[in-house]
Image (cartoon, rainbow, N blue to C red):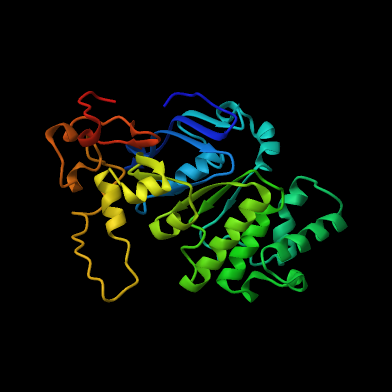
Length: 333
């Protein structure tokens, strides 16, 4: 998947890596490397919701932070709206920050407990010198109404709100600067089930109203199914499958994707599922298996899977997969 950017692509990743050195001993020497994000090629189209799924520890959230340049990639190229962010200075990055925002996973720790709601939501406006004080206050009140909060509570503090209300505050804060891209980092996983649907529907309504582009990071495939247009599946730092939502859920090709979908609970006590589950635990990213990272847990693993890395190839129109079983590859990537 080389760089053939079109007007429909807002974000394009090319061979992006994020490695963390691991040190140990008295001299703090480097004893290993965690490959959190390993050679990712990905495009996010304008106006779409791209779901990014996988088990905890697979590198999903790290990839989101790298796209936002909250962390610098070890190597590779990141294009946002046609501009390569890899060599953009911190100063030049500042105006671009207005166009990309993040909604954090935990609505409890992502809000400053010492700041009132109005101050929290207006923080980005203050940092970017957007408007006068009265204009900022007006915008904050508008955003609060937009996300379903009463403007009268503008002077209250985070501890006075429920989890769902706090996440609405986080969404209002992310919207303040009228961004184009929103990284939604497991935005409903810390909420009660009854509140999740409300927040998901709010995000979908806001996307339509403001033509937002979402990268929706989650381990919950039923939530991803509800909100996404396309879905990317990640395992130990690598993408293993990418397809349109309907195609992925009706025709999952990678054994890992099949196992994840099989594990989705059915809300009917009468239905008995014969789910055997994946063999073993997720391997350590510090010491991943050679070849295809999934081979120790894969029921179809072949000899080639243990020594070579399958390429990420298009096996059906707009359906990419990283698996020797499906692509007929025997060469290394």
